[in-house]
Length: 238
Image (cartoon, rainbow, N blue to C red; front, side, top):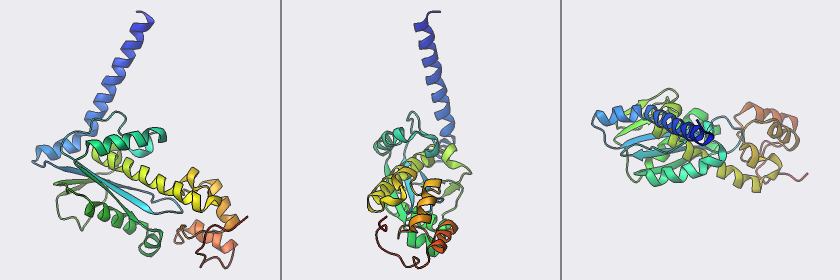
């Protein structure tokens, strides 16, 4: 077998593996279609863990398979590919929408209920609602239509994976914007997560108004710099 033939065979095998993976990723959607539901929605949130910024949810509604190469849980998709996939998802969907819950709402409600609130807002913003909703292991009590919580749904359901990508791309862009306002913390790099760089910046400067004061690492930084609990301005100068 020549090198060219070997390369063609490897490419053919890779295409077949991706096709089989996408088939598996659609089994929950296909089951819902078989039960008579035409419009299937997938919903997911991103940003539960970060120390700063909103939690963001997205919902994607489809009437057929989302056979997009590379579609997967957003955490498994390279950053440089997410934006391109997000464009394809929006073009392929019957409807899509994004919802947010603010830092103030996270601190007031707790991160779980703020995540539910963001999902409710994404659902309310849809131009066309789904007949059947797939979620990532949560039940949205305010949603009256049929829904199915799937454990690790962002890795098992095509529509939930698509929603996770839209939410991730949207939230990352918000944190890049925050970086311009609060450059001391490095939001553009770590997107608010508790990296060593972020923790060191918190300990040096204290929190800005976009930090979640209900999170213990933020409170610990405030204890190091007394008097910053009511801080509501831009990042302090070095």
